[in-house]
Length: 335
Image (cartoon, rainbow, N blue to C red; front, side, top):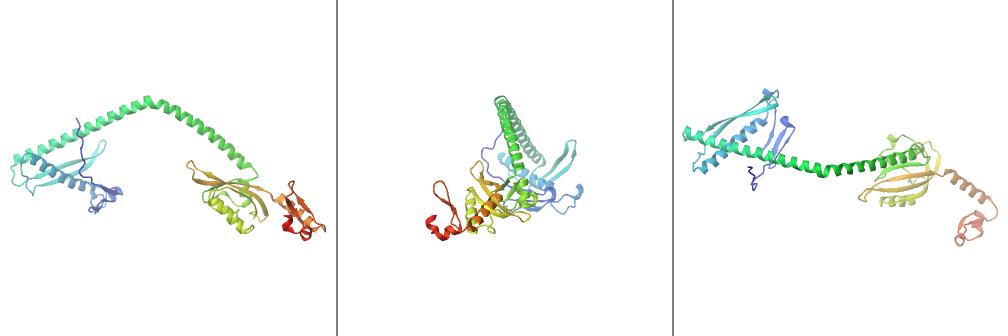
């Protein structure tokens, strides 16, 4: 039969740090001690050790138990009742063990009566210890039964579930490997950023374009949306959109790591976690330098013509016009 505390009256809280060479203090701050390994155990001494604390606490508790048992028998225990407790520690086959010796002093009480009182306290303590062991054994039995039930009723379905999850994760892993291989070998610049738009990973094309190694770029901003070579106001607008977790796409002018002028079609796309929170961004940038240079050359040729030239889309929208056309016509009305 087990005995369970029906209502906990008081709980003590203490925190120890550093083990036998550390410190210990109670939550109310009334006990705050430096601990030290005694010289007999190879330490330097100079501080309280756990065996001393155990001796003090055990002896005080034992007197409290004596008062309780004496009260049940209508015996008045003297106020100067004391216990000299000795706690020893040493090796046993399984590791370390402790021994406790109590020298009980009850002034004014006959030796036989004092001995009987101590034996009753010990008997009560032994009964509580047996109850505690029985409670532990019962808890273990219940736990084993539950585990057995779980094994029969849950383990097999759980094993099937784990197998399905493993197959799903394996398939996803293989897909990610294929995507990573494509990203690594493509001529486009590809990078993965965190939520603050700092580089987590970049492919070879990105590293060759920006200049530097992956270790040098990780943790830094890619620097593509810089106002140094682009409209500063437009770059601010794009960065604000990214701050809101939106994707942006823009043709930008930048410099390569070796100083060449480059034009890139840059596409930022946000990445969200399972809770819908912004986790980062992907960058895919295409090198459109040759196309832009061709457009600039065409613009130069058109501007050199003495006649006005206007290029229109199929819907009549003006795409481009040269200087002569601008001078001959009101540009605003053309546009």
